[in-house]
Image (cartoon, rainbow, N blue to C red; front, side, top):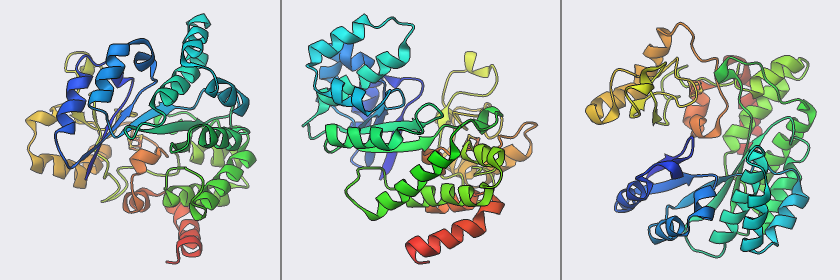
Length: 332
Ligand code: SF4
């Protein structure tokens, strides 16, 4: 199966998003993930109806902006009209509070429907690191059948130091997530290799908080261009620098850091399958070698992709600890 992620900034604003989803839907070998704040689904009934006519497989909502578990329990019991009224009363300058309501509204709208399934992406950052476990629990209880995908806030791709704050709390989340993979009852996305790699980073850097914060923020953690096999998740997006203002979209590269592996010279629809394959095999590594400011790394779970790509891009100093953890949890 081909998994297509429609995301970033907010694909619901694309004027042809319904057509794009419908065209993808015509293929039987494609899983469609649609990432959105939910704002348009809440405000535009005809858009919501059209989405439900040809639904994606998964609608991914943001759970980054919940204040605490109590807020989720409170919003979850409100009628949809009351949610919308509360949303309208929030000043536009408080975008995070608006987004929290948009996510709950959309999840409520989809509750009980066979399709699309609801996924909550949850960025763990210094302001919520002490509440992530209770937020995940509240989402799981309020929205049976949903999946929750927590991951640490990323800074290295912007050449910034890590900013997780309470690293002991973060490591407790890592342990909790690893345990969740042995206990099927918690509806978190299944990525044991990812959490074992983060645990390795905690073990290796525990005596040096600034190194650990940097590793959790992406460096030294993983690089898509480190070796063959790491770059297995194909990103198609903007070009690098200011090119995207004149040649919009369709460029192979990285959505997050456009100074390392991005091919600004050509758009994907003008490339052959062979050229795309070559980019995935060794092209990205060659581009990174020529970059004057190569990306320090990242820990975005989607980009680390599967076990093979995670291990192929993992920082050298994390590999021994990772392999011990893999042996202990997976048996090889
Ligand atoms: S995918 Fe590569 S270029 Fe993009 S943020 Fe991660 S390491 Fe950097």
